[in-house]
Length: 276
Image 1 (tube, rainbow, N blue to C red):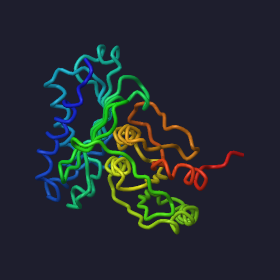
Image 2 (cartoon, helix red, strand yellow):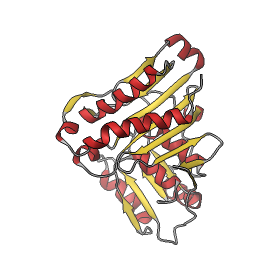
Image 3 (tube, rainbow, N blue to C red):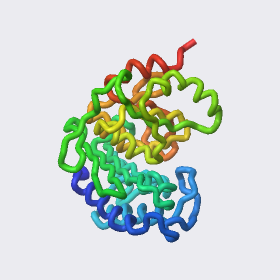
Image 4 (cartoon, rainbow, N blue to C red):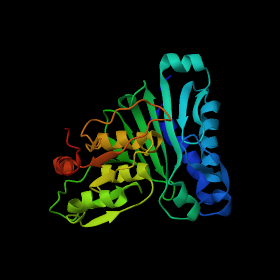
């Protein structure tokens, strides 16, 4: 059985209802185990993930769940999940540090795939855990913010553009020097802390690009945002200029460049690694 987009939206709303009252609280910040994604899980991460798992189990769904905290877990009948190739990739709380400190920028993301690759993602939902706004998309049907269709902006480098940068601490100065020509050309730069939500902001035209140079960026952070961005006619590519295509796995990690159509050639010219 293929998951319905409204079912995914309802899961997102259920997570919102459970965790929104906890944002910025001591209860949210209580430390737990280290999650499968590599980060130290906090109580709010576990609470959100449990809401998702319970929703799937109650609905008698058969699929592979890939989640930042628990890693990979079969829900329902493993054999049926493997045969149907049903996969749900989730980040229960994207922007956990923002969430526990009360900084109003965090989200829950869910990406549903039938297959084994990023290109097999069919449906996606990202909910803003502050505002309850829902970004969503179905492959081939466009991207939406609540009930309104969204699309990337048409601004180019000559206009007042907003970028987000996410840089690794390793070789920080080297990366900043590499980015200096771009930075000098921009109107404003942001570092916000929820990759899923930031991709949605590029998709809806609130920002022009999101440059994430961190090799530790996880599939669970961006799986839903990638489909939403693509359905809004946005662009996303690797540091080699190639399509972003990886296995649906908790171990998939990669940097990326996301932008509107006007910036694609500019950013590829400035950032793409030259082949020897």
